[in-house]
Length: 139
Image 1 (cartoon, rainbow, N blue to C red):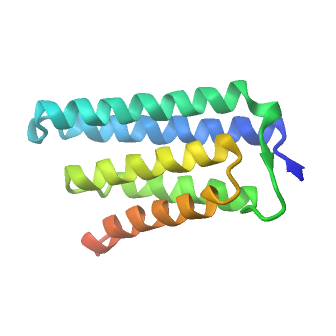
Image 2: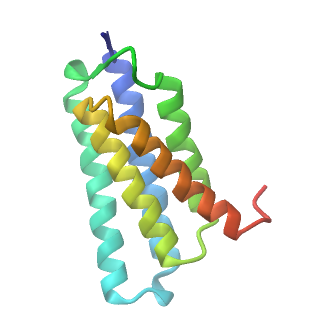
């Protein structure tokens, strides 16, 4: 088994925090078009992402990746793709789907769930791809 170093876990935590921030910025920018329920749901998702980041920081030493899991670079690139897609979200559902996929992904990484990480990456890719597909002008 290969352990994530504390630095690796800290970097992942930073990426989840950054993803939470850009989702929050999208929520604020689109406040006028969101219902109170949608606003609250995205707020809850943002808080969950921030809590995941915090958990990654505090549990850094205990996180383990097995040989069958995705390499760290793949984990990081999945989050980066999601953060990039946020600025192209056009609908609440896209924001919610992306936030939910990030939460699923974060939970799988934090728990060290060998079977869950690949499935979570696919969910994150699907959410990101749905945003890109709906907006072909993304550069």
